[in-house]
Image (tube, rainbow, N blue to C red; front, side, top):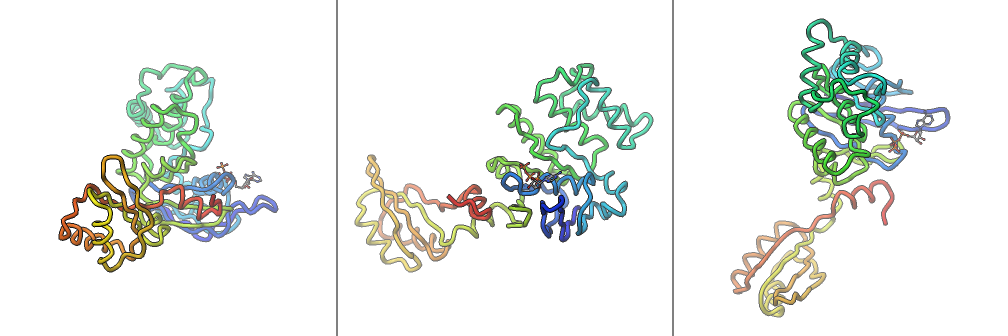
Length: 311
Ligand SMILES: Nc1ncnc2c1ncn2[C@@H]1O[C@H](COP(=O)(O)OP(=O)(O)OP(=O)(O)O)[C@@H](O)[C@H]1O
Protein backbone atom coordinates (compact mmCIF):
# COMPACT_ATOMS: atom_id res chain seq x y z
CA UNK A 1 0.00 0.00 0.00
CA UNK A 2 2.74 2.46 1.04
CA UNK A 3 6.47 2.17 0.57
CA UNK A 4 8.71 4.70 2.28
CA UNK A 5 12.36 4.58 1.27
CA UNK A 6 15.25 6.50 2.81
CA UNK A 7 13.00 9.38 3.77
CA UNK A 8 14.83 12.42 5.13
CA UNK A 9 13.42 15.81 6.08
CA UNK A 10 15.37 18.85 7.21
CA UNK A 11 13.84 22.06 8.57
CA UNK A 12 16.80 24.38 8.13
CA UNK A 13 19.46 22.89 10.38
CA UNK A 14 17.04 20.54 12.17
CA UNK A 15 16.88 16.99 10.81
CA UNK A 16 13.33 15.94 11.74
CA UNK A 17 13.40 12.61 9.87
CA UNK A 18 16.57 10.74 8.97
CA UNK A 19 16.77 7.94 6.38
CA UNK A 20 13.49 6.33 7.36
CA UNK A 21 12.30 3.23 5.48
CA UNK A 22 9.23 1.09 6.19
CA UNK A 23 6.03 -0.04 4.52
CA UNK A 24 2.35 -0.06 5.31
CA UNK A 25 0.72 -3.28 4.13
CA UNK A 26 -2.73 -3.79 2.65
CA UNK A 27 -5.48 -3.89 5.28
CA UNK A 28 -3.26 -3.52 8.30
CA UNK A 29 -3.37 -1.02 11.13
CA UNK A 30 0.19 0.16 11.64
CA UNK A 31 1.00 1.90 14.91
CA UNK A 32 3.42 4.81 14.71
CA UNK A 33 5.15 5.43 18.01
CA UNK A 34 7.79 7.86 19.13
CA UNK A 35 8.44 10.37 21.90
CA UNK A 36 7.54 14.04 21.43
CA UNK A 37 9.48 15.57 18.58
CA UNK A 38 10.49 12.17 17.14
CA UNK A 39 9.23 13.13 13.68
CA UNK A 40 5.83 11.38 13.55
CA UNK A 41 3.75 14.33 12.34
CA UNK A 42 6.46 15.29 9.83
CA UNK A 43 6.44 11.75 8.38
CA UNK A 44 2.64 11.64 8.26
CA UNK A 45 2.47 15.05 6.57
CA UNK A 46 4.93 13.81 3.95
CA UNK A 47 3.02 10.55 3.30
CA UNK A 48 -0.16 12.62 2.94
CA UNK A 49 1.55 14.84 0.37
CA UNK A 50 1.28 18.01 2.50
CA UNK A 51 5.00 18.45 3.00
CA UNK A 52 7.85 17.93 0.53
CA UNK A 53 10.71 15.55 1.33
CA UNK A 54 14.35 16.66 1.49
CA UNK A 55 15.31 13.28 0.01
CA UNK A 56 13.95 9.77 -0.31
CA UNK A 57 10.72 8.48 -1.83
CA UNK A 58 7.16 7.74 -0.76
CA UNK A 59 5.01 5.55 -2.93
CA UNK A 60 1.27 5.31 -2.22
CA UNK A 61 -0.84 2.73 -4.13
CA UNK A 62 1.83 2.63 -6.83
CA UNK A 63 2.03 6.42 -7.22
CA UNK A 64 5.06 8.49 -6.25
CA UNK A 65 3.83 11.23 -3.89
CA UNK A 66 6.13 13.78 -5.56
CA UNK A 67 5.84 12.80 -9.24
CA UNK A 68 2.20 11.73 -9.23
CA UNK A 69 0.76 13.63 -6.27
CA UNK A 70 -2.80 13.89 -7.54
CA UNK A 71 -3.23 10.14 -8.09
CA UNK A 72 -1.51 9.31 -4.79
CA UNK A 73 -3.69 11.77 -2.85
CA UNK A 74 -6.83 10.17 -4.29
CA UNK A 75 -5.95 7.02 -2.30
CA UNK A 76 -5.43 8.91 0.96
CA UNK A 77 -7.68 10.10 3.76
CA UNK A 78 -5.87 12.24 6.30
CA UNK A 79 -6.81 13.30 9.81
CA UNK A 80 -4.03 15.64 10.97
CA UNK A 81 -3.28 16.26 14.65
CA UNK A 82 -5.37 19.42 14.44
CA UNK A 83 -8.28 18.62 12.08
CA UNK A 84 -8.74 21.27 9.36
CA UNK A 85 -12.26 22.27 10.39
CA UNK A 86 -14.04 25.53 9.56
CA UNK A 87 -15.91 26.62 12.69
CA UNK A 88 -18.36 28.84 10.80
CA UNK A 89 -19.53 26.04 8.50
CA UNK A 90 -22.27 23.56 9.29
CA UNK A 91 -21.41 19.85 9.41
CA UNK A 92 -23.07 18.84 6.14
CA UNK A 93 -21.94 22.00 4.36
CA UNK A 94 -18.34 21.35 5.43
CA UNK A 95 -18.42 17.71 4.32
CA UNK A 96 -19.86 18.72 0.93
CA UNK A 97 -17.07 21.25 0.60
CA UNK A 98 -14.45 18.59 1.43
CA UNK A 99 -16.05 16.18 -1.06
CA UNK A 100 -15.61 18.85 -3.74
CA UNK A 101 -11.93 19.30 -2.87
CA UNK A 102 -11.48 15.53 -3.12
CA UNK A 103 -12.84 15.57 -6.68
CA UNK A 104 -16.18 13.92 -5.85
CA UNK A 105 -18.75 15.31 -8.30
CA UNK A 106 -22.50 15.49 -9.05
CA UNK A 107 -24.90 13.09 -7.34
CA UNK A 108 -21.96 11.28 -5.74
CA UNK A 109 -21.44 14.24 -3.35
CA UNK A 110 -24.80 13.80 -1.62
CA UNK A 111 -24.43 10.01 -1.58
CA UNK A 112 -20.93 10.10 -0.09
CA UNK A 113 -21.73 12.80 2.49
CA UNK A 114 -24.85 10.91 3.65
CA UNK A 115 -22.79 7.72 3.89
CA UNK A 116 -20.02 9.17 6.07
CA UNK A 117 -22.47 11.09 8.28
CA UNK A 118 -24.33 7.85 8.91
CA UNK A 119 -21.12 5.91 9.61
CA UNK A 120 -19.97 8.46 12.17
CA UNK A 121 -23.43 9.13 13.62
CA UNK A 122 -23.41 12.73 12.52
CA UNK A 123 -26.73 12.75 10.68
CA UNK A 124 -28.59 14.45 13.57
CA UNK A 125 -25.85 17.09 13.74
CA UNK A 126 -25.85 17.91 10.02
CA UNK A 127 -27.11 21.48 10.47
CA UNK A 128 -25.04 22.22 13.58
CA UNK A 129 -22.30 24.86 13.31
CA UNK A 130 -18.89 23.17 13.74
CA UNK A 131 -17.96 25.87 16.28
CA UNK A 132 -20.75 24.60 18.54
CA UNK A 133 -19.77 20.92 18.48
CA UNK A 134 -18.11 19.14 21.40
CA UNK A 135 -14.51 17.98 20.99
CA UNK A 136 -15.71 14.40 20.37
CA UNK A 137 -18.10 15.45 17.60
CA UNK A 138 -15.45 17.70 16.04
CA UNK A 139 -13.14 14.69 15.89
CA UNK A 140 -15.91 12.67 14.23
CA UNK A 141 -16.31 15.40 11.60
CA UNK A 142 -12.51 15.32 11.06
CA UNK A 143 -12.67 11.57 10.60
CA UNK A 144 -15.71 11.86 8.33
CA UNK A 145 -13.79 14.16 5.95
CA UNK A 146 -10.88 11.68 6.01
CA UNK A 147 -13.03 8.70 4.94
CA UNK A 148 -14.99 10.63 2.28
CA UNK A 149 -14.60 8.86 -1.06
CA UNK A 150 -13.52 5.67 0.72
CA UNK A 151 -9.72 6.07 0.28
CA UNK A 152 -7.62 2.93 0.62
CA UNK A 153 -5.14 4.50 3.05
CA UNK A 154 -6.05 6.39 6.22
CA UNK A 155 -3.49 8.50 8.04
CA UNK A 156 -4.60 9.29 11.57
CA UNK A 157 -2.37 11.55 13.65
CA UNK A 158 -3.15 11.14 17.36
CA UNK A 159 -6.90 10.82 16.74
CA UNK A 160 -7.93 10.19 20.35
CA UNK A 161 -6.14 13.15 21.98
CA UNK A 162 -8.51 15.18 24.17
CA UNK A 163 -11.42 12.74 24.02
CA UNK A 164 -13.16 11.32 27.10
CA UNK A 165 -12.80 7.57 27.82
CA UNK A 166 -16.15 6.64 26.21
CA UNK A 167 -15.29 8.57 23.05
CA UNK A 168 -11.81 6.99 23.00
CA UNK A 169 -13.35 3.50 23.22
CA UNK A 170 -15.85 4.33 20.42
CA UNK A 171 -13.17 5.75 18.17
CA UNK A 172 -10.86 2.78 18.71
CA UNK A 173 -13.69 0.43 17.80
CA UNK A 174 -14.32 2.44 14.66
CA UNK A 175 -10.62 2.40 13.69
CA UNK A 176 -10.59 -1.38 14.17
CA UNK A 177 -13.50 -1.78 11.75
CA UNK A 178 -11.76 0.54 9.28
CA UNK A 179 -8.69 -1.72 9.43
CA UNK A 180 -10.67 -4.66 8.03
CA UNK A 181 -10.74 -3.20 4.54
CA UNK A 182 -8.34 -0.24 4.68
CA UNK A 183 -4.70 0.34 5.48
CA UNK A 184 -4.34 2.61 8.47
CA UNK A 185 -1.32 4.35 9.95
CA UNK A 186 -2.08 5.60 13.44
CA UNK A 187 0.19 7.66 15.63
CA UNK A 188 -0.37 7.83 19.34
CA UNK A 189 1.38 8.53 22.60
CA UNK A 190 -0.80 5.99 24.33
CA UNK A 191 0.97 2.66 24.23
CA UNK A 192 -2.08 0.71 25.40
CA UNK A 193 -3.98 2.18 22.47
CA UNK A 194 -1.37 0.97 20.00
CA UNK A 195 -1.43 -2.49 21.66
CA UNK A 196 -5.22 -2.64 21.51
CA UNK A 197 -5.67 -1.48 17.93
CA UNK A 198 -2.57 -2.21 15.84
CA UNK A 199 -1.23 -5.25 14.02
CA UNK A 200 2.35 -3.99 13.67
CA UNK A 201 4.22 -1.06 15.06
CA UNK A 202 6.94 1.30 13.84
CA UNK A 203 9.00 2.95 16.57
CA UNK A 204 11.04 6.05 15.78
CA UNK A 205 13.22 8.25 17.92
CA UNK A 206 15.03 11.46 16.93
CA UNK A 207 13.81 10.95 13.37
CA UNK A 208 15.37 7.51 13.05
CA UNK A 209 13.85 4.07 12.83
CA UNK A 210 14.25 1.97 15.95
CA UNK A 211 11.98 -0.99 15.16
CA UNK A 212 9.31 -2.33 12.80
CA UNK A 213 7.57 -5.51 13.90
CA UNK A 214 4.47 -7.04 15.43
CA UNK A 215 3.96 -6.10 19.07
CA UNK A 216 4.26 -9.76 20.02
CA UNK A 217 7.64 -10.14 18.29
CA UNK A 218 8.98 -6.91 19.78
CA UNK A 219 8.04 -8.02 23.26
CA UNK A 220 9.58 -11.45 22.65
CA UNK A 221 12.83 -9.99 21.28
CA UNK A 222 13.15 -7.70 24.27
CA UNK A 223 12.43 -10.32 26.84
CA UNK A 224 15.78 -12.20 26.74
CA UNK A 225 15.23 -15.45 28.60
CA UNK A 226 11.55 -16.20 29.05
CA UNK A 227 10.15 -16.12 32.58
CA UNK A 228 7.54 -18.64 33.68
CA UNK A 229 5.16 -17.82 36.49
CA UNK A 230 4.01 -21.07 38.11
CA UNK A 231 1.47 -21.37 40.93
CA UNK A 232 1.31 -24.73 42.76
CA UNK A 233 -0.52 -26.13 45.76
CA UNK A 234 1.11 -27.79 48.75
CA UNK A 235 4.69 -28.11 49.92
CA UNK A 236 7.16 -25.67 48.36
CA UNK A 237 9.96 -28.10 48.96
CA UNK A 238 8.31 -30.89 46.99
CA UNK A 239 7.78 -28.59 43.99
CA UNK A 240 11.35 -27.25 44.25
CA UNK A 241 12.65 -30.80 44.25
CA UNK A 242 10.72 -31.71 41.08
CA UNK A 243 11.80 -28.49 39.36
CA UNK A 244 15.43 -29.18 40.25
CA UNK A 245 15.29 -32.29 38.06
CA UNK A 246 14.05 -30.48 34.91
CA UNK A 247 16.68 -29.64 32.29
CA UNK A 248 16.43 -26.20 30.65
CA UNK A 249 15.68 -24.20 33.81
CA UNK A 250 18.23 -21.39 34.13
CA UNK A 251 17.25 -20.12 37.54
CA UNK A 252 14.41 -20.00 40.04
CA UNK A 253 14.34 -16.26 40.56
CA UNK A 254 11.74 -16.01 43.28
CA UNK A 255 9.24 -18.03 45.34
CA UNK A 256 6.24 -16.22 46.81
CA UNK A 257 4.07 -17.90 49.41
CA UNK A 258 0.37 -16.97 49.28
CA UNK A 259 -2.02 -16.98 52.28
CA UNK A 260 -4.20 -19.66 50.64
CA UNK A 261 -1.38 -22.20 50.80
CA UNK A 262 -0.32 -21.87 47.19
CA UNK A 263 3.19 -20.78 46.09
CA UNK A 264 4.26 -18.83 43.03
CA UNK A 265 7.59 -19.71 41.41
CA UNK A 266 9.24 -17.27 38.99
CA UNK A 267 11.41 -19.42 36.79
CA UNK A 268 13.85 -18.26 34.13
CA UNK A 269 13.85 -20.73 31.22
CA UNK A 270 16.42 -21.36 28.49
CA UNK A 271 13.58 -21.76 26.03
CA UNK A 272 9.81 -21.36 26.19
CA UNK A 273 9.42 -25.03 25.18
CA UNK A 274 10.82 -26.15 28.58
CA UNK A 275 7.37 -25.25 29.93
CA UNK A 276 6.01 -28.57 28.66
CA UNK A 277 8.76 -30.56 30.44
CA UNK A 278 8.01 -28.69 33.66
CA UNK A 279 4.32 -29.52 33.38
CA UNK A 280 5.05 -33.19 32.74
CA UNK A 281 7.48 -33.39 35.68
CA UNK A 282 5.01 -31.73 38.06
CA UNK A 283 2.18 -34.07 37.05
CA UNK A 284 4.47 -37.06 37.48
CA UNK A 285 5.61 -35.77 40.89
CA UNK A 286 1.97 -35.43 42.04
CA UNK A 287 2.14 -31.62 42.36
CA UNK A 288 -1.12 -29.75 41.78
CA UNK A 289 -0.63 -26.91 39.31
CA UNK A 290 -3.03 -23.98 39.82
CA UNK A 291 -1.71 -21.67 37.11
CA UNK A 292 1.11 -21.43 34.61
CA UNK A 293 1.82 -18.41 32.40
CA UNK A 294 4.69 -16.77 30.55
CA UNK A 295 5.63 -13.26 31.64
CA UNK A 296 6.53 -10.78 28.90
CA UNK A 297 7.64 -7.18 29.02
CA UNK A 298 4.81 -4.94 27.82
CA UNK A 299 5.03 -2.49 24.96
CA UNK A 300 5.94 0.30 27.35
CA UNK A 301 9.20 -1.42 28.34
CA UNK A 302 10.01 -2.10 24.68
CA UNK A 303 9.32 1.52 23.82
CA UNK A 304 11.49 2.90 26.64
CA UNK A 305 14.33 0.58 25.74
CA UNK A 306 14.25 1.39 22.02
CA UNK A 307 13.92 5.13 22.42
CA UNK A 308 16.72 5.34 24.96
CA UNK A 309 14.44 6.42 27.78
CA UNK A 310 14.93 3.38 29.95
CA UNK A 311 13.98 4.09 33.56
N1 LIG B 1 7.97 23.74 10.68
C1 LIG B 1 9.01 23.36 11.43
N2 LIG B 1 10.14 24.11 11.46
C2 LIG B 1 11.21 23.74 12.18
N3 LIG B 1 11.27 22.62 12.91
C3 LIG B 1 10.18 21.84 12.94
C4 LIG B 1 9.00 22.18 12.20
N4 LIG B 1 8.08 21.19 12.41
C5 LIG B 1 8.67 20.31 13.24
N5 LIG B 1 9.93 20.69 13.56
C6 LIG B 1 10.89 19.95 14.39
O1 LIG B 1 11.07 18.66 13.81
C7 LIG B 1 11.13 17.65 14.82
C8 LIG B 1 10.02 16.62 14.59
O2 LIG B 1 8.77 17.22 14.84
P1 LIG B 1 7.37 16.46 14.65
O3 LIG B 1 6.27 17.44 14.93
O4 LIG B 1 7.36 15.77 13.34
O5 LIG B 1 7.46 15.37 15.82
P2 LIG B 1 6.32 14.48 16.46
O6 LIG B 1 6.91 13.14 16.67
O7 LIG B 1 5.07 14.56 15.66
O8 LIG B 1 6.09 15.20 17.86
P3 LIG B 1 4.74 15.30 18.77
O9 LIG B 1 4.47 13.92 19.26
O10 LIG B 1 5.17 16.22 19.86
O11 LIG B 1 3.64 15.83 17.90
C9 LIG B 1 11.03 18.39 16.15
O12 LIG B 1 12.34 18.62 16.60
C10 LIG B 1 10.34 19.69 15.79
O13 LIG B 1 10.73 20.71 16.67
